Length: 184
View 1 (cartoon, rainbow, N blue to C red):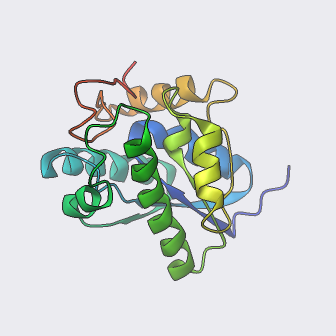
View 2 (view 1 turned 90 degrees about the horizontal axis):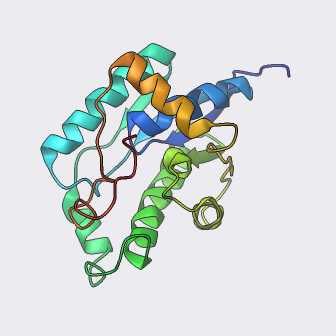
């Protein structure tokens, strides 16, 4: 496969753990990934800072650009208002994903990047088809199932080798006690 690294793609990154293998695979596919860290769902500024610092280290390792938004948890809380008591993987999670993919699509347009995708799909706790359907509603979403070919194992290996911060929940206060999404 010939590489065309001038072809940019915006990769929404939920965290460094989940984005290591997607960055690597997108490069193999001929893309020049630009990582977009937009995660207002994170429950505290401290958690946001830890994940952002790990993301910076990962992007430096791969030599890719990182675009990071400021922490704005109120934006997330307003977006999911009324869904706080929903079960994990329910409509609150769908709205959370929708918010992040809307913003990713908008950022891609702003940066004049034609395609976007997300590292969210690498988690075994996330539904590839559902996330891809949400993403497809906002523009040129590239549906890549990063879980395939042991993607989740590969991304965890990368994060361990680099000694990156390894959280054990998706990020919001509603999920903190219910799901262990990334740590293995």
